[in-house]
Length: 254
Ligand code: 0L1
Ligand code: MG
Image (cartoon, rainbow, N blue to C red; front, side, top):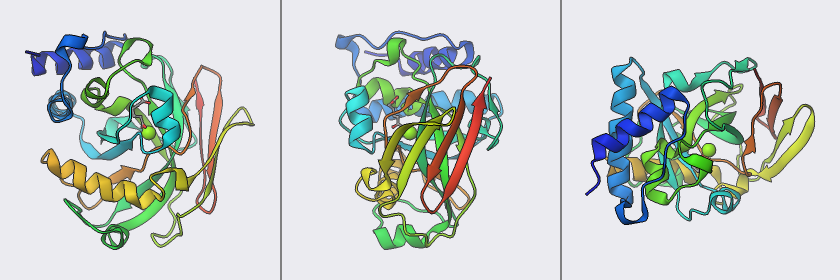
């Protein structure tokens, strides 16, 4: 039987040391519910270092992302205050193993959401929406993992940037999204690639987090998931994401 605390500790050491760790062997794979428990234990280790949970990220909410990593299910992870970076600022490459950037849409909540909620209820819980970039950095060697592996690894979440806030009633249905490196467009997509509509990711966040005993609260940030594949980062890159109607978010890698 897998020792869940030991697995959480091993993944946390990979985060802190920026050194990749091995996947769980095939005969020790864990199911999703167990993996979310490992994720929770890993976040407890971060909290013990003074980090605070400020929201959640939804992962694998688009076909492009599922195809990129070979996993076929939506996942979620926790965002902490230490993972947030200043929009327009620098991202130091050194604390990461093999970071990638992906364009996202962020929701900022004005009230809590938990369990089964409708699209209308999710929309009414919004304080604002914003363009965002998530930095993912699988703690596993070669960015290779099973569903249980990646959930235990906080759905690969490593850092994030949030751009300017827009009104909560901004139409998010089919917005063009582009990720550029050094001024050249590398990935393009549509917000419709995120579960058909990004608000569905918020509905899924309320439902899925509740199953693990986690509630979304007023003030929380929810990343809806990427509309395109993720792009590997290297020092020196200037990264910009533009989301139609929402604006831009950028940073440079040092
Ligand atoms: O945010 C995401 O869609 C990533 C979830 C984990 C899979 C990956 O590392 O790409
Ligand atoms: Mg993501």
